[in-house]
Amino acid sequence: MSSHSTYNPYTPTYTTESGSAGAKGPLRGFVKVVCIFFIILGALGLLHTIQAVVGLSMNFIMESTPEQKAMNGLNIFPGAIIVTILFVLINFCVSICLILGGVMGLKQKLKGAKLIRSTAGFMVVFKIVETVYGTVAGYLLFGPIKEQMIKQMQADPNGPKIDMGFIFDIGMYVGLAFVVLMGLAMFLFYLFAFLKFNKQQTLAQFS
Image 1: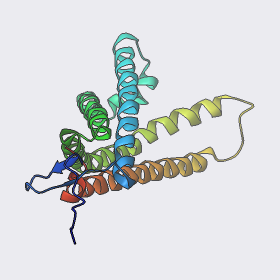
Image 2: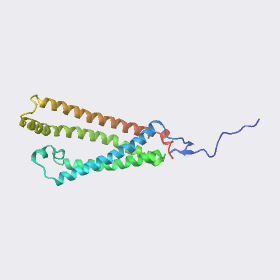
Image 3: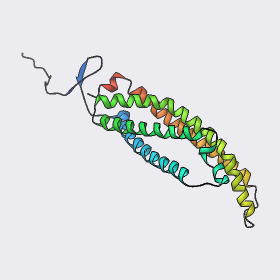
Image 4: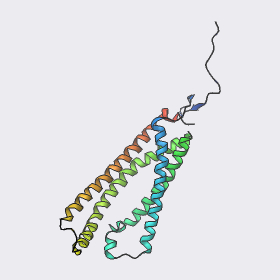
């Protein structure tokens, strides 16, 4: 009785970093989701970069009153504008890496998978720094904004007669909580992406 092999020499194969080979199928599950989300996050990051550049340009061009300067996040502490510019540059570079990694990842290029892994690893650390800075900056900026808003309301004879300071405080804590939760969500996403793309089983889907 003759036997036959099911081996097909034309079946696509992959080669992992360890040198083993096997069949390569389409992207699936969380791996594909990460690639798509990287493209979306990269596009949103580029839009944010454009907005930040326009905002910085307007800040240098337009003259501001002392009250406006007090409510400007670029003046909350000495050197804040340098930190802001640094964040904008990092955001721009990361956005490009996100888009390139996502696009090449969907094409199942190993370079794309490695770029996703590297970018996700960087963002795990950067998201902690960014969230902490955003929370502290928001807290420092809230005081001047609250003071100016209360002054404007007190100057309006038809303004509300309730204690707006308490309402502003609630709004501040809700806003800061939102920043922290969003930062935590993005931190977990990048962490899971890094861990997933750090596995040979995942890299085996790319060539």
